[in-house]
Length: 478
Image (cartoon, rainbow, N blue to C red; front, top):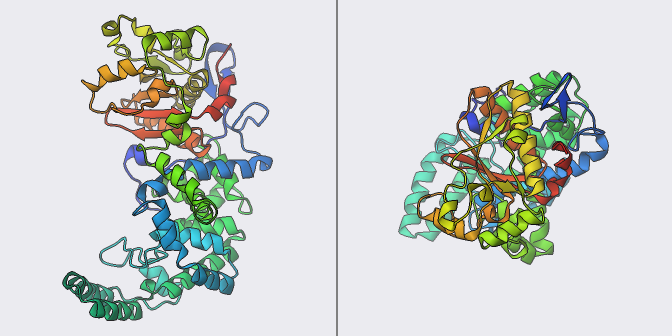
């Protein structure tokens, strides 16, 4: 439970949490040389524009787009974490009923916050988040009326560790009971009741269930400040999230981004945790399949394009056939320049070893190219920079991938999304801090629409594009 009243210090530049932008690519008035991103132009022009009618669609996409971290960080895997969480279902239902909150949401918070571990600790001093629902010491004492004694709990914790090392099960049990007595955050029924009371209190203060859930991580005061900056306080979180950008409702966006602690995406991750619990009960085999795809790489890229369902290019000849039938389209320098993009001269440098030209390895699926153009145009408009992002890698075939392994430690010896034409890399070298922030914004925005999976590598940002991004096809000029 992250409920500090003041914004947290921002993380490193490219870890700054950012939100979604409502945008459309159009031409500058009187200048047909390059497109720009214009927020708030409306759904008729922008395939990703927020409207109330699309709220459920956007929220569902955001839950999918931000689920990876739960799978990646679940101790023992998603099914094991869900099983631990499910053990507390009767206690969850009792606490939820008493506070008149949704039991599925409270259970999802348990999965997200502690993975069902009542002894989970985020701060060794125990002033920070502790227990099944990760309640801060200050919040537990002052807002929820819980008995919270970090000093006493730390002292018992030291004895508990020694008893555990000795294998003294009876003493371990007694010490855990003593710790629950001095710090109720370690007591599952009381931790659940406290979290449920918080959700009820927050709903009364904010007027909406979705905002109450957001505030569980962000804090009521912080969220109220963002709503005031937006100019309305009786709106859904989906509207606040997708309609606050660096160029539209900029102050609301600035306040959200300044938190720097994933508060902005907390609701989407709660929704993702709810889905994990649903699958655990209704279709555990599907949960296992999704978990395997989510954890195969450092992003959800294999979930977007599972190897068994994809069509990688094995040889240069297969890749050339893909160009011929336009499954892959070539990168054109002049076109990319309009969107604030340029080609790294080294792209395709191993082609001569396969008796091919570099141009063979400078192409993408049409949908992936459209999304790349969308990113470039957005970064240029938001940052105000005339500098270009450098695209370092696009499509490869498996023979090229094997050559690359000998010289690039970041290249995977396994299934590479580059061999499908759905992935590209952008050099992590920027002309300004504004350009770097704008790129981070676009990545987070597209992830929230579940249109990309991305990961930060030492030299580049690796992006995999979903086939669902076909809606961005209109971005590219004919």
